[in-house]
Length: 534
Image 1 (tube, rainbow, N blue to C red):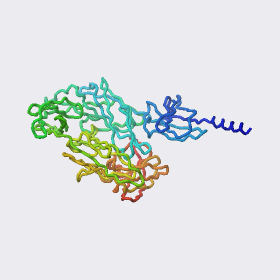
Image 2 (image 1 turned 180 degrees about the vertical axis):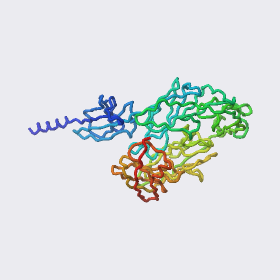
Image 3 (image 1 turned 120 degrees about the horizontal axis):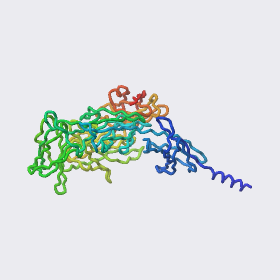
Image 4 (image 1 turned 30 degrees about the horizontal axis):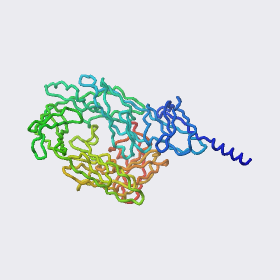
């Protein structure tokens, strides 16, 4: 009898089944999302999968007990991928779990690119630039033009660029997250040149920024509301006066460099010209503005390159000199003290951005500078590939190390690449210095639950993502930011989810000043900043 009872108990235990059920909702309307894929993942791999019914409901039976993360996916919604979209939960033996998933509907932006006569421009390269949204203390930006990504809240100021093209009629359409976006178009290289101006002077197409200007600083943002649509956007290509640019290409020893291709502009904007036997060249039509002219040559096993920024304004430009130079040897060494409290983190890539030109700045909506990228070798050192003489600054790929490490400086001689642009014309050694003696800031941020706190250096030169630090608020609004580089900061608290805001005087005026000292804890109680709708 006892054996029979034991078998019955064992059979009942074996018959216990774990169930995961729930619903997936549209975050904007509250309606159920039918046809959404629901995945249960373990260690990042999907083990169970189902699809919601027309009302957004789902159920998965016979799920093994354990720890899982739920992921929801629908082509009509953007909160669909990435580790920080997962919703972790524990499923105990003989239990069931009810989940509620919220998907954010795509917004939509559509319009047309036209020439001066209002005719659609086919295959025109478009660039869309935005900063994204803050969700659960992290930043995200995704579009249907090439995916997207997420990052720490302190990295929110970094704009991401997505690229697309117009169709055969000059039309375009993109699905994107809500936010404020910059839009620009690069004239396709095969586009017929504009007719001459009223004075008979030559005109040329130029990169055009919304709503129809040729200078990035004069551009306006397009605001796209959650789940909304902005349609009928018309971007008319700008034609500006054009002039000739003449110059010469020189070898490293100063002799003329014949039969070399010289190009200018951003990407394949114009057909290159070939230098003459005496090294001279001429571009007969160059739009007014600031342009980067470049040439390359191969001398045996050595690759040479020349780059020069030229401003074209009101008249022809003469005597431009492009002097070829070989690759630089740029090595970087990371100095990082060992920490008793944490293992030495894995080093990621380093990137230097090639700068130059009066109007070439990080807030430009256009293409970033050519980069010199370095990956750590077996000894943990970096050797930059493709670096030529030029003006450089630290690129956005410098990894922000986890606590207790913080970036102190990136030394090139007496200069600090982390806070300034540096002209590098010969082989150099770069030292990336991390330290572990940072301070911390803690306190309470009113109404900050599910939001976050960002510390922004008061020194404008250090207002870069690698020097900012952030932390999420807990359910009571408490926060603590660790491994902060000693110095003075503005502390800003942001409540909940919303658009990433660019740091400006209006935000700084709402911040609390706090001083961080080495190895010490500072406190600052904050009031959260109410974000505008957009």
